[in-house]
Length: 335
Image 1: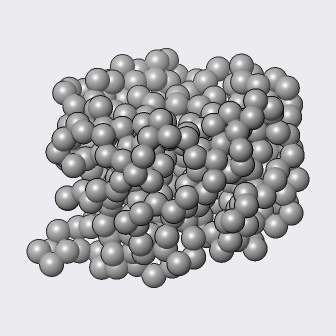
Image 2 (image 1 turned 180 degrees about the horizontal axis):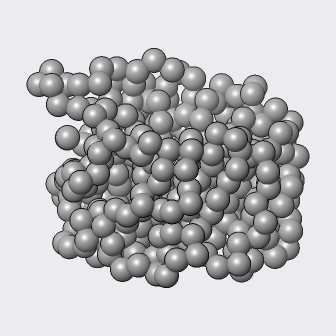
Image 3 (image 1 turned 120 degrees about the vertical axis):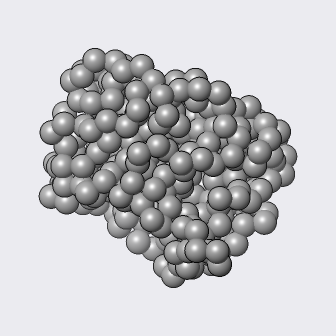
């Protein structure tokens, strides 16, 4: 997918990746630095903790970064194939709980090409397909041969051949019931997972979802059943990427537009209103999009022109527009 310039007219580096945490957001810039904004009570912004920040600011001492991923009260970054994490929680495999830590190396994890985080759960995948997860106790066995992964609050899912396999800490229905340990999805390219649902993108550009559907996160009228078989989301064609929030889902389409569905009580779908939406709905004002992130109550998009736009709940400044006002539609963030 084509992208825009790496620097602005004034020579400043531009965003190349954005990730959403529960109450914070971070962007990786073209010079390898990271800027974050939002809640910082637990050190989510990588500076050891402090007041909320409603505009982007650099993470001190963090450079050479290739990728960034945020959870509920922590964040991690890939640098030279190694991982650094910060904030509050179990930031390293088998380690003690940290409190408002600044970025620190994660020992024993190297050669990382894929990283994702959600809640207190972080997973990293190496080029050889080995996957390591941490942040929770008693993590179930992780499958071999994962080619793409996505983290949920207490579990993760990965693409393994023509199937999606999920694993977790053992205290989540996804693993206790075993309903989602191995879900066949022919032609699967990518997986995204929320707290209790998952969606897969196929090579044909279709999106299939399964799991809970209490707020329409499967793209169909809500119900209280647990759906253990993937079903295609009606009306979504030509998708090139998918992401999931806690109970919401978005797909980036080949024409650069974005369509979303599911929970929307805080405006997390960016569709101009605060009501759950079971039908995939286009996010107005977004075009030329290359990447999207979703969290529990907000989302952000990165365009091919290197612009970042965010929407949803803004109680901690996680939208990044200098206010704490909820934004029901995307607003552009200044770097």
